[in-house]
Length: 84
Image (cartoon, rainbow, N blue to C red):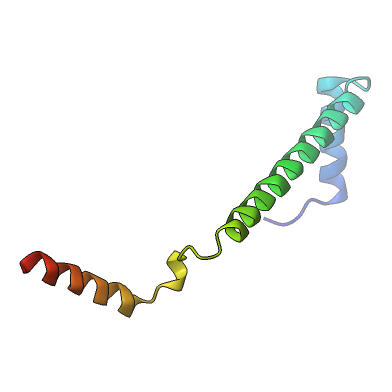
């Protein structure tokens, strides 16, 4: 599957004119642009919230910061403590 060529784009635009009419297409494009802008704003806010949460609690251990050996050692200690 390749990219769209000129003929395909013209065909899609013609079908859009037939379905929605020339008066509705600018409204449709405007609402699509507003939706895209709102989505980007939401994604940006989510990223900022995540960064703020991570920076507000720097002492909390991160899952990726724990090595496999440390996890294995902790599991052994807990198993030994249960047996004792």
